[in-house]
Length: 126
Image (cartoon, rainbow, N blue to C red; front, side, top):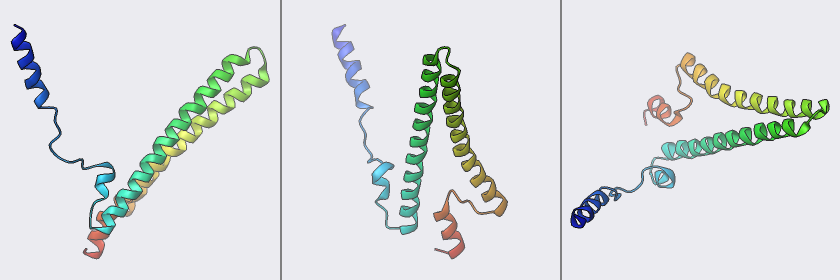
């Protein structure tokens, strides 16, 4: 019985090895096409800024919520906490609306602004 368990564990473990090198992250910049590498760089930067914006939203919203709880009966503190939470939500809405506006303008104009390297290759025949 113990032998079967060890064999099953060994068999299960063989499928977890990574055989191919990673294709995303920093290894994705190992390309000779300057348009694609520039697009990947901007994509990484925008992704990082989006993640940072989301984290800032969470911190600001939770900070406002804790201040609201700690405000007790003081109407001034509660109003400041409410304002902080509203500002955090407005910032998140602006960030999401930015993506929506870029996508909408790109579809109206017929130019995918979120994929500039592919568009440059199509337009300039690269």
